Picture (cartoon, rainbow, N blue to C red):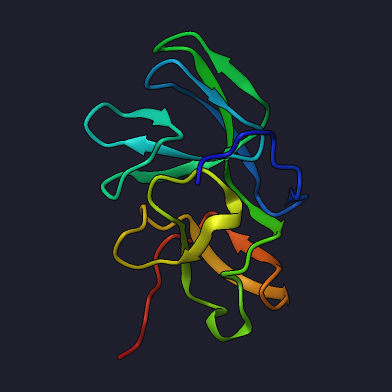
Length: 147
């Protein structure tokens, strides 16, 4: 579900290599603080109304009401992200990649990466409270496994 107000139940963990960048938006839209931002591969622009083919870009730093394309939105693209209010964070999935549910910019809709989700946003490092809060490494978006 799309956000209808700023999402305040998150923060970047200082000293984890956090990096904030600006990206051009796809078009007129409201980018709420804390929204999950995605890149449209065909245009390379940032949007909140994501689709399956989109790639995660970052966490929106401050609310922006964009009047049209090419306005700049600022997002956290690297670092460790702490979030709460997310039912999809459970202890059995620590170490797996997580993603936003398609058509949602709401962090409450973060789930384990699978079909029907946007490209991985990061790796779940630690679950603080099962079914509620945890830490996600935005820098590590793929897993290397030894099979």
